[in-house]
Picture 1: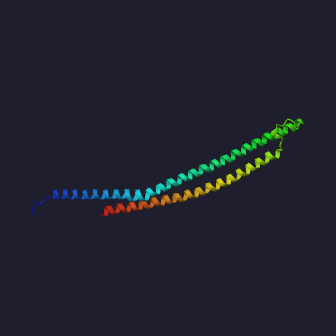
Picture 2 (picture 1 turned 60 degrees about the vertical axis):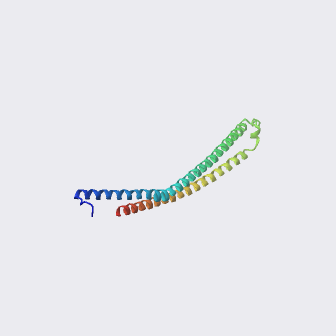
Picture 3 (picture 1 turned 90 degrees about the vertical axis):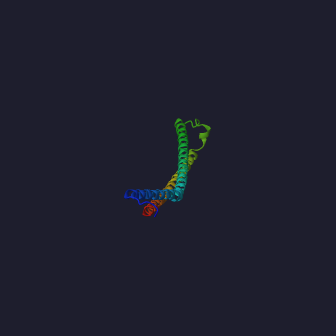
Length: 169
């Protein structure tokens, strides 16, 4: 009661300063809560998990592709060997000499054909394995994407609750 009475303008200015000081304090609290709880705990943990799983899936996909490429290269090499042997046998048969074959080609042609069919079978198995692995990884990535969307939904819902609570007080 020792204070002099304030005129209307000074009272309004004091109220505005007080309001802005409270708002700044609340925004600071909101910012630290968002950074600590939402970004650090929820979203931060999920992003670390997400990046790790995606990295593993990409690494596995590259390994599957390399395995498939290797099996394909083996089939091509085996087929070229078979074709080469077949051509030599065909040419020597056409000559009627039968002696023009190199020592390696003196084996029966069926051994080269057997090797080719074996490599082709391995390639078919590699293709089946590749399809199985890739479809499994596709399903895993779908689950991960659903989890990502659910996490983002929860983070946004918590953010809205925090903002609402901040401005309600």
